[in-house]
Image 1 (cartoon, chains in turn cyan, brown):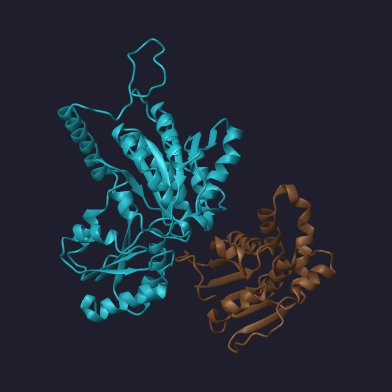
Image 2 (image 1 turned 90 degrees about the horizontal axis):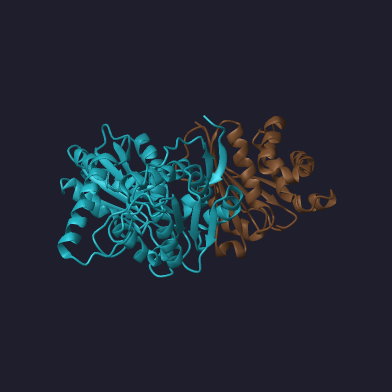
Length: 355
Length: 177
């Protein structure tokens, strides 16, 4: 393994993107993800890439659309309000079946909100990033190492399925430093015969477009896209199980909330409470099957989130109401303490969740 | 299992984040699990800049230090803000040049280091942070010159390699306090 270095999560994303062969970055500064742009501004010119600070988030996502059309690995990054601005572009990327990587280092909302960490863009990322029927592959890192690894993975999945991959992080994950090994395995980008990269007078013109005025053709496009999504759901779901073997209480948490929950679970286990965690790594596709299996032996689920309760809906859907799903949360930039999660676990245990 | 949760705090510009980063790198070089998390945003432009550093034998869970085993307070607002949070039996190191009051807690170890004055007297006015770090390492019984040197190389860029020696000197001054 390569020597580990200390890096901020934001920097790890940027460096991993370069390792993945991304040579085009477009963005507009916003806390708490500005280190990504700063890193790209420093590095891209030195390796023959493009760093461009666009005049707005909307411009940046449309520049991404352009480069993605030409078949190159490309990314943008922002934080919550900036991602909302990119919504139209995300829908157009989906409508044109273009691969791209978008990073959202979330902050508290809605509106301009604050600049402290949050996970309240879960619905936006997994349900409604823009208009129309579409999904993005949503990856939720819980360590700086994963920030790097999932960035590479995000590019690969985007290319494989011609989708947008989103890294859904938060201010804590972006700002924290941890040891990271950057000897990442990168698969070469696949051929992109659809790319608008010049015919060289040897093939018909490629057209990348999301406009389709004939309803039955547009319907077929949607069907075909959702068939691809089904394959993603089948093959690309990722999660981590922690102490789930004998768990009677199951925490559902991703990103920073999962980190905090681990402390609480370790303490609860010392107190003899049978608690574990399922940590979704892909938020879309959501790891439904593992939750459904867990519902056979888990008495209570607790969704631990930095939101008013968004992922909890997916947990309820996946567990088919076989067991109660409680919410343990903070919002607005406040972060859960391990003590708060421990208390939720203890209460669940007291109320018959576990003995 | 051993886990040290540390909180470094002071004014922006005192090298708080740098001191924390140094300790995190030292943990990494000593083959520990580490995390470093800065405060960011408007609070940095007010009274206190701070960073959470965790050095542990086990994987680090939450990177947020809310009940520090070690509090480094380099100004009064920091001591006011964090003193009550220190874990009982923990440690507070205060820059007594800038903090005139005494620590109120009687269930923690307290060390007063006139770091800002010592830094200025020794011609290294920007290194009060590393004097404090020297004291911290001594009190943790962790002042190993080999790993200190390797860690300094990690946090001081090649461009500023001439600062290595004076940083080491600052830490030695702190360790002798």
